[in-house]
Length: 265
Length: 337
Figure 1 (spheres, chains in turn orange, cyan):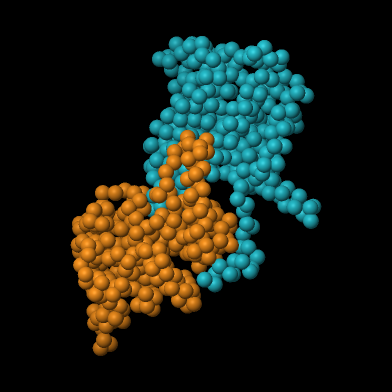
Figure 2: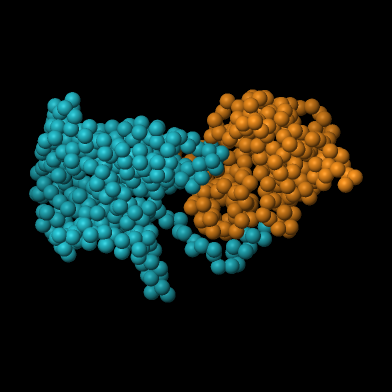
């Protein structure tokens, strides 16, 4: 999405408003605000301890902000318990991969559909007709996603034995299975080699374009962020340091200072 | 991504676990079923009674397997749920003159509610702490059943005698044989329902919680709800087993449902293979017959012999009957080639 389209001023899909998080005496996030517009890839960057993951965990409701608000399509998400975040269209992956290690790839992705399906234990035990129809729909959808992410060949393999890169893709598949409007990716390039990072960038863009998603990318890998993000927010010590296009943020003296130390060193 | 090709070209990193890893194939299931149907025709009444108990304990082990193998929660309190089921059936039959078959669903529902409610405080505990909390439940139950306040219904320390049902429709079979087939029908029904449950959306939610609570929650799984549901389902099935046990033994008394029973069931689950439902019957056989075998070897030291046998099993096949089944499957596949 271009800057011009962003400037058209349609309401943001997700709005982070003045969010602060305090742990004991430590201010992990200090009045951070930014908007995410539909169809954009937003890169969230910053050195270690900048507050990226803290913000991420506020979005998935693992942390409660001390002040500020987070609005999804205009409605605050802060009153929702963590398990009711998926149903409003926020899906995520985890920094160090949080799959269900004893389940097959297929079952991992099936769990991803939990928020979009319904059942009760009695109907499930009796395998009533509507449960069977629901399972058939789920399976169709899951196989479509597995094919999309090139995971069909390992569909029945238990995930704990898969290589790390494949596990990351399974996690992505699981997140896609919930039909999120916003995909939160926590360091998707971590642990991948150079070529894999390149392929991943393409994949994220393809997912945005073909599956009509908005992506929040928290990433250390500058090359990846700068090549695929439409918009970048840089954090340092819990504050927003800079915001703009990748080129703007890259050229920002504060950002350069945060990453490399001051210029005259 | 290149990683996918690695998986395909190299030898699989783990043995590909077949889709139905939690259950038996159709062929094997039918053979086991046929054996269970035909066996009582050739044996004495006492053996039939023992086979009935085998099925009943298998149900109780299965219930624990759903809780531990499915949702990852420990319980040393299954004897309490078993006791509540047994007393519910006994009291309804003896005080309300209810038909024995009708008492079982009631026992199941009451125990489901009991387990569901007990699951609420258990939400704050996990691992060994949860095991200890359920342990407390198991130790408290026999004393609660002896309370003078309930004595009118429970019979206090004396317990209650339960009338054994006759075969219906004038079928020419002994009471023991009828009860065996009745128990078998109930067991098959519960087994199929359990398999369905674990393979369904709810079952996947249980297993997701077992493997990673935070990720499960991010996928929309209500962790608290499904954890308590798992407790409820487990307690409900244990309650039905308890009700059947009361009818089969024709007697309920507080000291029949001590912590020893809960530990036996736990043992049965481990020997059968945690998370492998067909293993439940193997585990049940272990806790019913191995003590007798131990006694046959040495009367005075039966406990020690039992301990040695248990140690051998755990040492040789730490994953229990599931592991034996997998080895057997591998051998058969080799023979075929």
